[in-house]
Length: 223
Length: 272
Image 1 (cartoon, rainbow over the protein chains, first blue to last red):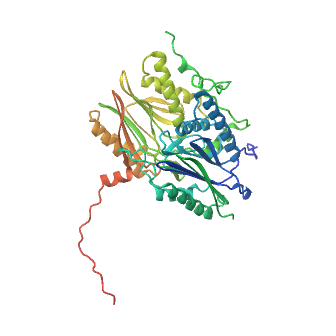
Image 2 (cartoon, rainbow over the protein chains, first blue to last red):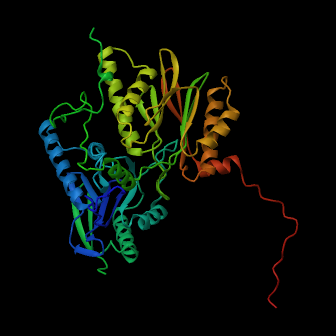
């Protein structure tokens, strides 16, 4: 008798796309608000973006139950950090914490594809991109999720920043102004919604700069 | 002086998880394991879902001036290039480097863990750890997770009291000492160039150029390798990054486009 395989999987994919772009003194993080399962839309109004610290925001696509658990875990760890150090975690510190948190579930992974965006200790924009088990990299821009294969080439075309590995080093941060970056994000999601069934409904944009954090909502195609 | 046996402790603990508020470093990380009847099958599916970045070219060799370490920077997930700027040469401490091939998260995490263990060794024993010791620490950890699906093919390169050291360590539990290694899908191409041009008495500049060329040729022929060719040198004072060049630009540097001489030129015909 052939080995019986489980007909139940602990994972599901709720779809959606996320993008983050780092600027000289700002960071834009955006995600659509559609929550789906298979060919069904569960809701058009689900936020995939979570504020982890004052200057640190995470957007995650994949299995939203795992994403929710991950957000709670990081929130709890951040609270402990604040109690122990009497200050907020910086974005690079949170980036490493997220990497380790993901790797601790290496043999039963969080099905969560994350981008972390925020300002570093000098006020410069920074974006970190992850895989499901915690490998991470500081980049100038990134996209994750079902629309990422459509979005990434476009961002490469518009924003291709010199690799941080080049020697002599060249700056990875985009020369775009904040409003140009926000427009780029709107364009990118409009295009992705045309060709990715899991991306659409509404776009949530979060911008972090020296003045603080602001949120914007734009309508996308609902079909 | 108490003998430091932390390196002998098994990395996969049988029970207990480090407390959230407590010190997580001396206890090895403990990993929750899914409660399934078919662990292997589940792991196979989990690996498919995670699809670790595999294609790569890394190399390292010992010569009279120390150790030369080089790598590309492409990460691929199946046919999709997930990144062209991955750091595959990991700085464990100021005098030791590790290379990354296989699962990106596995390599990143365990190299950081190795760096922590090396630092603890320094503090406990008041002297730096040898390359032999560091590579053994890593190999023992990977051996204890053998069969669980970790994918790590790494080289530990460093300079200690005995001079330059180079070890190859992988997730099957293998550990080899050697003078020349190349790891990854592009390694056959890199070996071709490396083995052909290698001499022990090269200068640092010649060795760096050999390493750069070997990576370039591997990225030229292997689709899963590309991006930026980074070259590091490990000398008696520690490591320094010598160069980071985009391999696309290296191509035209090695093979410049010469405008061909025109023999006959076609003239524009006035519209009939």
